[in-house]
Length: 173
Image 1 (tube, rainbow, N blue to C red):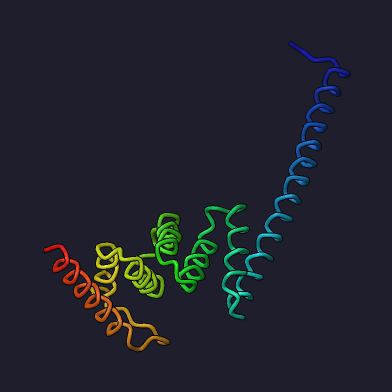
Image 2: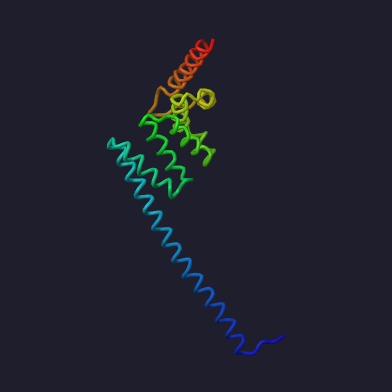
């Protein structure tokens, strides 16, 4: 089957038009995505500013807006967990921190995250989960420059868990 010259021109014109339209659509969608990203980043930065200035409720609201648009954002869930823990709702903070771990399972190698997760689990009275996390911290022999008593803190949290479990055991008897 041979194509005549005009048919070849139509085919080539169609391919070029298809490519140009594809590039235009991609550009429009990319610009929209860039705008959404910049808005979310701005809200996230605003939340961190509010947190550092002590406005934890404002920070929580800003982070919830970010999480509405980006529910699987590791960093937004992490920040939300920390802010909510500072607000005192340890059970909700534990949910956010668990989601961070679900999004990025490699966080189990981050000593700072792990000690924070352990503290939040203890505060939420999730003692079995806290024990697993804190024993991981202990076995890894982590230390942090800005937390020179890291291992002592881990040991204190483990002792707190044991005391809480003993108290619960005597209450149940």
